[in-house]
Amino acid sequence: MSDEMIVAVFDTAAHADAAVQDLLSAHVPQGAISTHANSASGGTATSTEKPGLWASLFGGEPDHDTAVYSQSVQGGSTVVTVKTPDRDVASVMSILARHNPIDIDERASSYGLTQKPSAPLSTGRTGMAATAPAADDGVIQLSEEELVVGKRVVNRGTTRIRRFVTEVPVEQQVSLHEESVKIERHPVTGDQSVPGTAFTDQTIEVAQTGEEAVVGKTARVYEEVNLRKQAVDRVETVKDTVRREDVEIEQIPSETVLNKTPKV
Image (tube, rainbow, N blue to C red; front, side):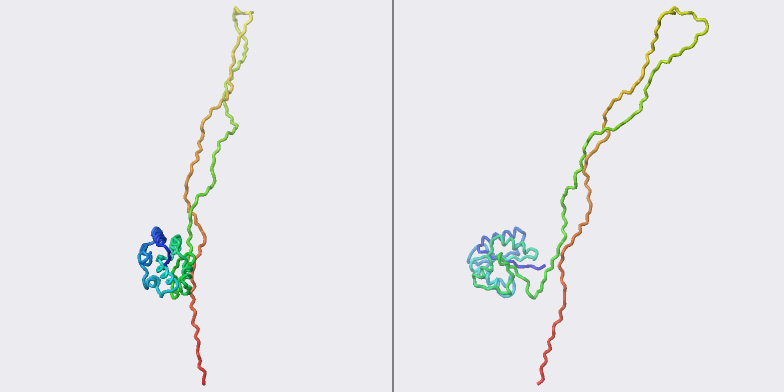
């Protein structure tokens, strides 16, 4: 993974210092941050602009943007440079943009400088520049997507228990005792004396009893029903598609031009 140099120009040292503090708070290494200001202007810069400074930072000869940096520093501005990996370029530029960097194109116009095709890539509106790979490097960045699967809790429904009353026909057999009177008559033989109560009215009574079913009801608990949640883990395979960039390498043969000298 390659590194890029991010450059931001601030007209006040206070804005530059605040930007540096935010970069440090975002865990940008202190050794990757540099500030450059004219020593005569004071402020909190850690180094001053010297001949060949921009060439040592960016490589190559002075160009459009380095001319803007040099004149800005001479005018009292502060230049903040951050060396950062490609993956962190966006976040670093976002932090710098919060502290009012100048617009490089507008500042260049005010200095009478004209953008050249060979100059580093500039974001223009944000007032920052990021060095681009040299043309000889021939770098193509390839990106790919990664599948990120998260989890969320959803309602799968509700289980409810409702108690209600029903009537069910039942029957039961019971043994009942019944009493009855049986009249028996039989002749008397032999000589028996006549009782003294003969020829008088007489009544004999025998009580008869019987059993009948008496229905009663008693209540008892015959079952308990509980509601209890049970957690079960399951593994689900999530299928999707992700995009990935690739390159196709093609060797193109050179075209040979034969120059023939005409005969004189």
